[in-house]
View 1 (cartoon, one colour):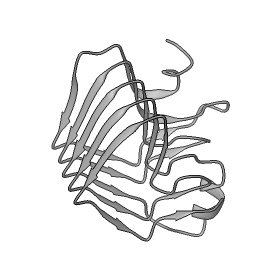
View 2: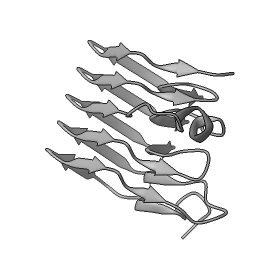
View 3: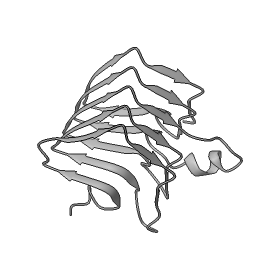
Length: 146
């Protein structure tokens, strides 16, 4: 494991293709005390999410859903949703990219719904040095606090 793939529920390092179809990722927790948290980490890989639901996943800090580095990512017909409650503001103060953190990627987002995304930077998506194609997505009630 590298620092990028530690503390992930799914760690993809130099994977030729990881395809998640008709899958639900709900109320997963990455709770290591010093963790940056990550539901799925993709480094030097190709990843596809098709008709998936990511709902109410939690991490101690930084990244709670997708952490994608130097990869090719296709995300389509998927739903990203966070239940907003009294703890939401406190939980998201240290988050970067409410649903997706992208560094040096080629990423295509098509026909997805992003609801109630919250983060200190990038309520839905935080992207650096990435090529993004964003088509026919719905963004509802998302917030960046910085």
